[in-house]
Image (cartoon, rainbow, N blue to C red; front, side, top):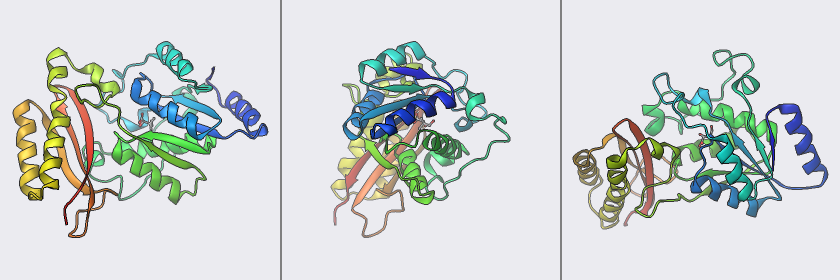
Length: 282
Ligand code: PAF
């Protein structure tokens, strides 16, 4: 696996792949890789001839009081994992390479509607930062296919709309959430949890599963969500939101069948997100 930091070298290597007629798969990440990221690489391998991963902790998608400085940077470990997973090329640009005029002067991409509410509500500007860096990476790599995890359900919806609206000729593949044995969705931020919090954390997923069962059995949405919020608080979480949306993130209507429960909640200082899809009864 080659690791490249600058754009001309990246373009040269990508040109070699294209001249050989190879289909390119992209896996954008912020590093500190776990089995969830490696599932993205495995999926990209199945959809493409060569896999390009990126590791870039994107300052544009962090709010002023968020964990940009604390975010784990583990490049040597990431390189070893990507190599073992069969990644062909790793691009690790610096902030100055992707945003040469500085963050304040950077042209940004905003995907309306789907970026609003949920994580977009509790993290203002977050999805503009994600949409901007993803657009830059799409322009630089020009992949045939790109893989994103379903744990970041809203992010995946934002990226799908971005690709449609900006006419990127890229197939977007969503990859199912990878969970620890106790149900906790794998996340780089799980490393912030202390031992007691790590024991409590799977309750987020267990609560969603309980709510899904109630909703699929025909319980009222209002009562179920209120029960869920109370249970999360009793367990030690401070919820940012707990919502039921249609699978496309639109509002629930009388005809909605395919739906998704989404939550973000703090455990101590760690913000965790999770989601669960379900089918509402007629
Ligand atoms: O999901 C992530 O790790 C990031 O939001 C992404 C897509 C790599 C953009 O920085």
